[in-house]
Image 1 (cartoon, rainbow, N blue to C red):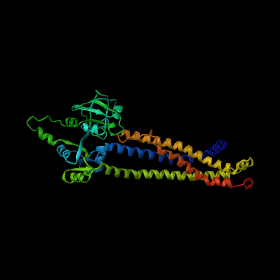
Image 2: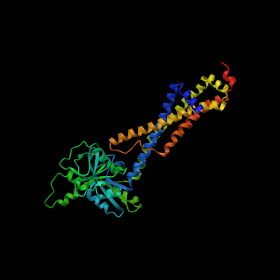
Image 3: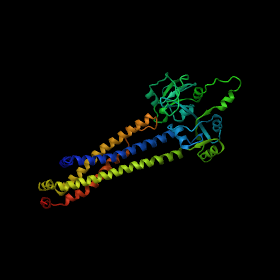
Amino acid sequence: MKTLALSFRYLWSRPLAALLNLLLLTLGLASMTFVLLASEQVDRAFERDLAGIDVVVGAKGSPMQLILAGVFHIDVPPGNIPLAEVERLARHPHVAKLIPLSLGDSFRGFRIVGTNADYLAHYRLTLDHGRAWQAPLEAVIGAHVAQDTGLRAGNSFAGSHGIAGGGGAGHGEHPYQVTGVLEPCGCVADRLVLTSTESVWEVHEHTPQPSDGKAHAQDEKREVTMALIKYKTPLAAVSFPRFVNASTAMQAAAPAVEVSRLLRMVGVGSDVLRGFGAVLLLTAALGVFIALWNAVRERRADLAMLRMLGARPAKVAALLLCEAWWLALLASALGLAAGHALAGLVGAMLEAQRSLPVTGRLWLAEELWIPAAALIVATLAALIPAVSAYRVDVAELLNPR
């Protein structure tokens, strides 16, 4: 305990050097903590929101855009597709389940999604209170939507055109009535407003219903934005996307393939940030080494006094090691706190954009290697100065130069 206390006082006897080394170590550990938290949460969100969806069918364009818009609801869809074509796909022998999605409107930045009851069943969504929609212009809202807007079952709201920010023209003449609020699921449905496909059609079809026998023709002209499909057999993954892309005006995008591409692209940024953190740690290690090496030279009289008072060489070396360990422990605490704070800040920014959920309140078992890495770096940096202090004898320490 005396060694720990004395080494702590020695450490802060040079406050500027101690603070600089502490800052470098903290920044390196904070960047690694942030990468660990963000990558883990993004991976979990992707896996959770995919929920066994085998393929997404939509308008021709970017397959990744189709996945991001239809599964994760963080991009704009490429366009609409005919309802008749989607209904034909639903009867395909390879299709076990087809869930239509109609996008285009939002409420305070939260997307309004027209679909059917299969969407609730597929994500295993349950109601916190109220009931599911049963008629057009009825809607259920996700937990985040309810928390942010204050809506409850029985309230009404009007959507607005556009899904990027909800700043388009309003649909005040077609208000929705909230019939229920979903329990938090930790998935994409938490930030969605779910209603029937017929609701979206009713809001956007301003012409009166035809009474001259042309109702069927109007149904043929109706569109949806995309369809989420689950196969009957895994073998369908070989032929079904090729069938859609070659024989229809639509495209089929496999979520597993596109998410793998996306994670590879995101992984490049993560590797860069990890490398930046490693450079900071290396710089901090060099700073600790220089500071402790100079400490051995500056404290010759102190070290000689300790040896004359009976301190063993190992005790003198332990003082230098403990200084480095104090830096490592302090930097670990500050680095973990800063990493979580940064994750929370990024999560707040993403939440404002109604994007992927990231929080700084999550603690991972993998974070245990953060202080371990700090201790290893500090020990390696202090090793040579500690050995140097261990080997010098009292006569040499007392010899003036």
